Image (tube, rainbow, N blue to C red; front, top):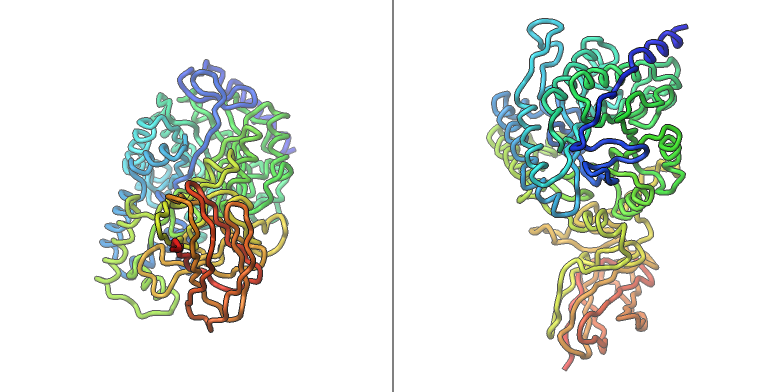
Length: 584
């Protein structure tokens, strides 16, 4: 009976949604496609600004529960409330600026997904001076205005994503900065009404802005509404409270804005649509999220079926946190099926995203203290370290992982390997081992473990780059000791059948000596291939772990472009660099 009443309510309340004429200036849906102002198919290629308005613990490498409010409490314990406010103000100012959006455009992206924290736009229900009222905060709206102006200047679409809803939308508490001691979004009518009101306020403000691409109204709900089911909602069959709230938000938006696409996400981190479909609005997109599974048609078949059945576009609203191999394969799969995508995230303290925020020594001391491995820093030391961390979030202080962007933008459409660094050899040159070519697995390099597929395999999470620094392919890269520069690294864990390729220019023909700087605890064996010609294998000596050089002579190089492959025959050794010298 309850199910019948809900269905009847939805049928009545949804009548008339988006019946007005859509403005031709805005993105909108047309059957199974998202189309631009000219009615042409638009494939969204974007990145989410994770860590900007909303920090998650893993992005800051903290060793405790990762909600932002918990991180903030730990920072306050070190430097006090006033200085903590100063740190967070600097973080919000520095993390994402016009230079970031300009750069995204220059790399080839056309959209930005903004993960919003509701508390930058309105007070929590517990802090409202008048119960049931909404106090609006200009901070979040002003930040969104700035981001929109930068996106518009680059003709990029800004997608608003409610990443942290009032009270928190799931049991995965880090995602939404949820405090489990307070009522969740699903346990509080007041939180739900605040979310509805916030979306209406956003729609009123941006209803006439064509470079707002869409409203992604609740990120990754993960909450069971049915007794005995998985707590994250992956097994729910009805999802009635979720659908009702999605409908209520859509209705509130449509009261003031018939221009913009509304994006919906299912339960279970966005993918469980039981009881939610069919869509109830004629300008709606079905989103899904994809992590750590195989990149085959079967992995997205459900959403291809939804698109066909409901004649509604689908969009990969969030994905990433894997290797370049996985990135390229996933994007190729999406684009072959005309599905747009938004990667996660643009930057963090980590190596597998376009921009890496570098860890300064003072912040490392704080992390070590939080792990119980170092003394507590003084207030002055901690304050300086945290302000330096905020300064390091600026793009000009980030390390740009050009290989990640290459894997996302170029490699899905090209089987060509290109140099990681441009080198022209006159009489001598040095190739850093970790600066092998950029390109796909099997084209620029080969490694025996190249991505993490643990969701599909049912096994444990797998690391592709065991050193977890510098590059995001399967090649295992580790820091040298001491490491004074970011590129003070070497390739390790080298196994039989793995190889690395280096493309470089030579000024004139000649024979050359190649000297390999290696370290090994047991003898290994390697071989080289130059421009397709394989030379006999040579022994990599046991050096008791110390760095030594092993030379091979009479390697023929030609004027112009040359390709050198270093092939592992018997592994176990480390490789830092290759020196090339012209022989007399």
